[in-house]
Length: 303
Ligand SMILES: C[C@@]1(CC(=O)O)c2cc3[nH]c(cc4nc(cc5[nH]c(cc(n2)[C@H]1CCC(=O)O)[C@@](C)(CC(=O)O)[C@@H]5CCC(=O)O)C(CC(=O)O)=C4CCC(=O)O)c(CCC(=O)O)c3CC(=O)O
Ligand SMILES: NC(=O)C1=CN([C@@H]2O[C@H](COP(=O)(O)OP(=O)(O)OC[C@H]3O[C@@H](n4cnc5c(N)ncnc54)[C@H](O)[C@@H]3O)[C@@H](O)[C@H]2O)C=CC1
Image (cartoon, rainbow, N blue to C red):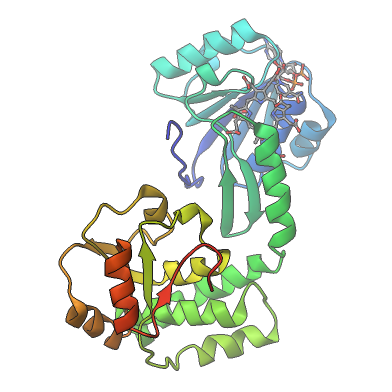
């Protein structure tokens, strides 16, 4: 992972954009939605950028850039069509610890711009580490059609109730089950039924945990999509073998792994309502499948 995704708080953040052509304007389309102070220095200004100036969202200094301008900012976008100038200013920024992005030259980028699905509090950033921005754009288009606009007010609703949920459900795991129930009932909608789903999710039915079994002959990449929600509920993975990277990637990051287990310990976890996964060789897994008839033995095409 050469490029690490993170989300920056743009309150009292200062951004300088050099150049105001089509590419700068694309960056400004996204930057202008933030709370950052944005200054643009450019000789010629395209219409889109001009509109941001007129609305007062950005400040513009219409002139040639000077070396001494590269100061007092957190981020710098170099969007001129002058390669040498962009590179020279990027080096200057680097010396001052200012993060720079040179639109057409990843080698001089301290950070790169992802393709962004913007749904208010819900932000999805996609990067191909510079390999194929067009693919990032197309993946965004797919996500755009999948995520309704109503998801923005939904997340405002959720944010407003977060403290109430913490107060009413003092145990961390209860809150996780609460939100899982809420999303499974409400999905991405935000309408009159959302409040009802929210209230009804406080009534948590204590269910027995789910046992998932996977043997070493199964390629995790071939697991059915239907297995994913089950894998996401796993609290602990039991295995005496190394769990393959591809399988581990399908589990929650906070799920634990243990190589110390027996049938009693699995039973105790399930009785507590916790879901477990056992990964092992065919003999071990078949044996467990016989002992736990309700277990889900995941194989390509199963479920
Ligand atoms: C490294 C990076 C640096 C950065 O800009 O931060 C970079 C670099 C370069 N882009 C180039 C070209 C194009 N870029 C786009 C589009 C986008 N490019 C974006 C990001 C990034 N572009 C960063 C990596 C992101 C990643 O990890 O994937 C997006 C996501 C965000 C944004 O720009 O706002 C936005 C889609 C937004 C959306 O719609 O969602 C299109 C398509 C189009 O215009 O429709 C083309 C033409 C097709 C093509 O050439 O591929 C070239 C070649 C220039 C040349 O040949 O002259 C370089 C330089 C090089 O590759 O060396
Ligand atoms: N247009 C596109 O889709 C893509 C373009 N690129 C590259 O990104 C760069 C920018 O592209 P465009 O926005 O289309 O270019 P553009 O030529 O439309 O805009 C360049 C901007 O930089 C300003 N500028 C140039 N020299 C300056 C200076 N000394 N001081 C202040 N401002 C100065 C110009 O006034 C103009 O506002 C180019 O190098 C281009 O090759 C990269 C990927 C895609």
